[in-house]
Amino acid sequence: MNKRDLKQWEIVFKGLGSANRLRILQLLRSRGLMSVTELSEELGISFKNTSRNLRILANLDLVDAKGKHDRVFYTVSPRLEGEVRKVLTTSIL
Image (cartoon, rainbow, N blue to C red; front, side, top):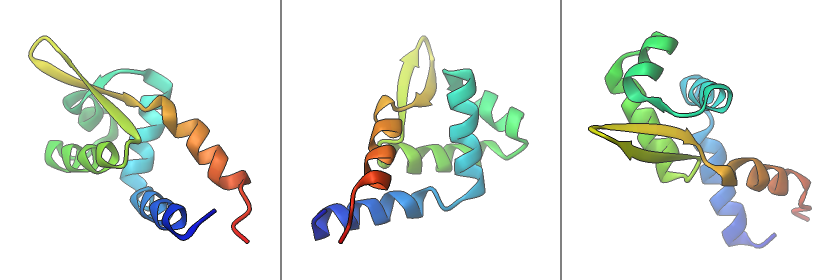
């Protein structure tokens, strides 16, 4: 793994360094598509906090946003599982 790849993974893992973001990913993985409102209510965190965390996860390509009617729904990115597994099994030495 080269230095650029390591830096990218450092950013991803820092992005996952939040209990709320991990809870969001866990809930999306188990439930599928959910709106910010649904996530906020289910997790007991503010709409603003949920939205901010989803934006961080989306910028890291860990969640995908899909517009449906007048709402946006989020889901775990299909790239997440394979990419995380890949970095955990790749030698960095």
